[in-house]
Length: 254
Ligand SMILES: Nc1ncnc2c1ncn2[C@@H]1O[C@H](COP(=O)(O)OP(=O)(O)OP(=O)(O)O)[C@@H](O)[C@H]1O
Image (cartoon, rainbow, N blue to C red):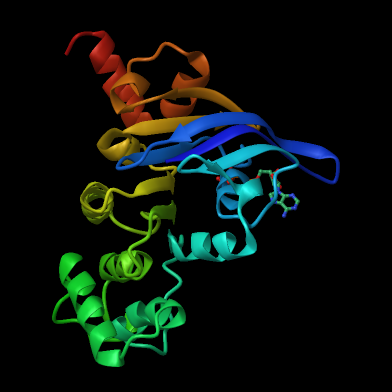
């Protein structure tokens, strides 16, 4: 669980986070949604420890970051897995080398032991058989799977995903969403996902933080988000024509 309490962050005197309170729950897919510039990435970077909030507290499983010793901060970075927007795979490394990379950074076990773990994780994301391939030789969806495998190989407690679906067709995007949700449950991880994808909201929005202009404008789950009458949320969601049609049909009782 990650709890953010009254988080403020400004750049050059301009406040981009204006007192965010939210609980990102363990074992759930927690989504941060909102328009461009609403502060999603800044909030994520605060949780990653890349930005220090100007005010407020971030607690990791009940412990405030400000009370972490230097060793505990290092431990925290080992407990975090990250799926980057573009995948951020190393093109010159094979699939298995990409997944091995963070393991070698944090673990001193023999290569054969580490490879057992790499193979286990690659199997989990259905990539057995592709171990020796290079990123350029596999599809976009498979590249995302490698990225997920690399993020979980160290058995993280916290998984951060920045638009994990970007660039994928809707069907593959849903498969990736479901994989992230399954892994979150299986490993009992606190997963935080930034997304613009309304299908993802519908599919895996177990706990949603909706940001607007640096403020938490709404929170709830996927069932509530499509029922809410809150205009700030409906303006955002139904700016997509597809969802506008779904909404109209819902209101007509179709
Ligand atoms: N390092 C920085 N220095 C100065 N301003 C920044 C910095 N990072 C973010 N900002 C500003 O903070 C505001 C929020 O940015 P942020 O990247 O969090 O938005 P976002 O909701 O993630 O947008 P998007 O969906 O487009 O990625 C923006 O006005 C942005 O210009």
